[in-house]
Length: 214
Image (tube, rainbow, N blue to C red; front, top):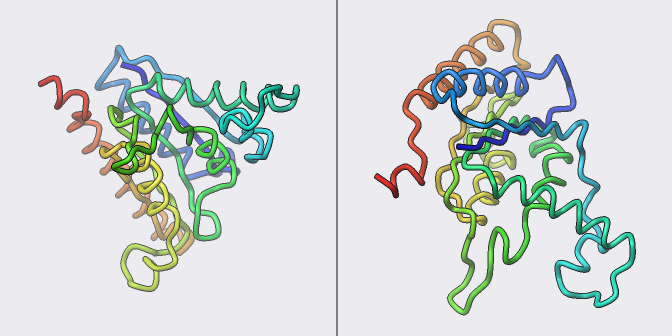
């Protein structure tokens, strides 16, 4: 089994999502010691924002690509190949300004490739990466899950569920720590709750591929 561990927080050692994603990997290794783990830190290895040059070859727009277009295509190929080669993806995804980090969005834009992670048919959209489990470590300063107003403003978890679903992935597990900016007691409680969610998720893990092969 191969696992891809992705961090996207800009806060380094002060990041709750990095703390919790590292704990997820620690527990995963304890339960599944033979897993091959790759690490992608999007703060260090940040994809450039998606551009016309990045789109050109993918869309078949250039028969004689420029050096810039070839470079952009190689970047996209590296990220999508790494993603497709893994069975489990653990993503540390803090909320910034009601959504995800621009670093994480840039990475996802590189994954969204027709013929690789999705395709359109006469019957509509077909996701091509459905044989994976995605575990999202969602962190938030405020409370967004417990009120109608909060849910309306939240474009972090909802986007990630939608885009991974677009890729055909139905096994998307959200592990959440929210209210982290509401005082020390609230932060401590949120982290403890998230750690309990991590333990339960790892201990009870059964991937889509496991269920198909069972």
